[in-house]
Length: 213
Image (cartoon, rainbow, N blue to C red):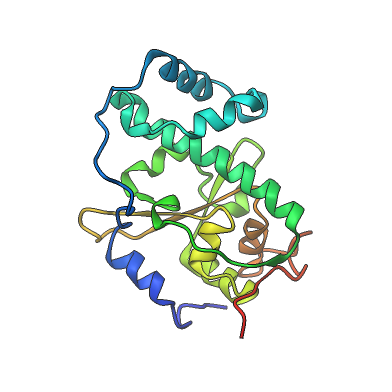
C-alpha cells in the first residue's frame, strides 16, 4: 500500500522546506580545533573502538564533546559516532519502557542532519537487506509513512523517542531527504514489514505513540 496520500503533519513540511533551526541557547559558534589534547584523545578512542568494546564510563564524557571544537577532519565523524551511541542508548531504554510511548519534544537539530554528512553514518542501503555489520539502515518515504500509520508515531516522535535521523540539503533544499534508523530499533522491523516485507517479532506488538484526546 502506498501512503503518499496520507496527510503529512506540519512538522514534515517544515523539515522539507527548511533546515533545523538553531537552538535558543546557541550563543556563538565554537572555534574549530580548540579542544584540548585529552578531549582529542578521547574522541580518537571512540572513533577507533567498536561500540560493544568501549569503556561505559567514558560514554557520557564523549557524548558531551562539542564536535565543532575538534580539528576539521574529526567533526563529522564525531557527530556520527555520537549519534550512533545515542541510538544504542535509545534502543536500550525503549525496550525497558515497552510499547506504550508518551511522546516528548526535542530540538530538531538532534535528529535533523546535513545531507552532506550522510555517508559518514555507514548505513545499509535498505533495512530489508541489513546485516549484523550495519548499525544503521536506510528507509524510504513510504516506509516512514507506514510507521506513522501503524503506530501513530509522528516523524518528530520517531526522531525524539526512537532513532530516526533525517538528512536534508540545508543549503538548497532541492535534493530528496534521506532517512535512517538504528538497525535494532523496533521501528526498523515495522519499516521492513511495509510493502509485504514479512512479519517480524516486533511487528504487530501494539507499539503506540499516545497523543491524548
